[in-house]
Image (cartoon, rainbow, N blue to C red; front, side, top):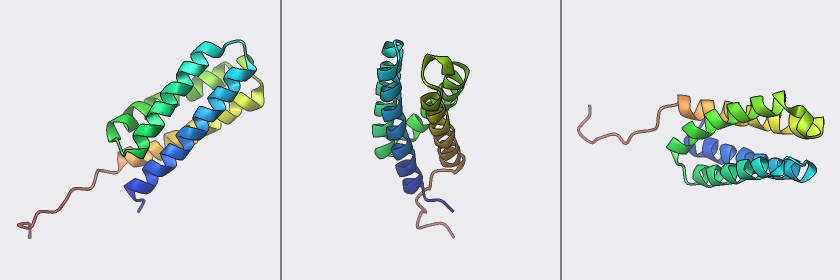
Length: 114
């Protein structure tokens, strides 16, 4: 089975790559302000992944799905290769977060359980 810490680390790496890609697309387009705000949100979520904040993973899962659909539907705002890079990163991040959230958090066993 996957370990929770490794999944949070994978989510942090994908979130950081998503942040870098979103800043890159913002530099290539005239539609920069909303993309920069989105990149900053991804950066904050990436810091939360490194701190193993599970509640941020719930928010990031929904955001990754919405962001992926947005870039897929509006691929005309940026070069197609850049938009599809963000779509692929969002899909990969959604899969990692789905696995992370599907798995229950580990609980410490009590000494009195048999």
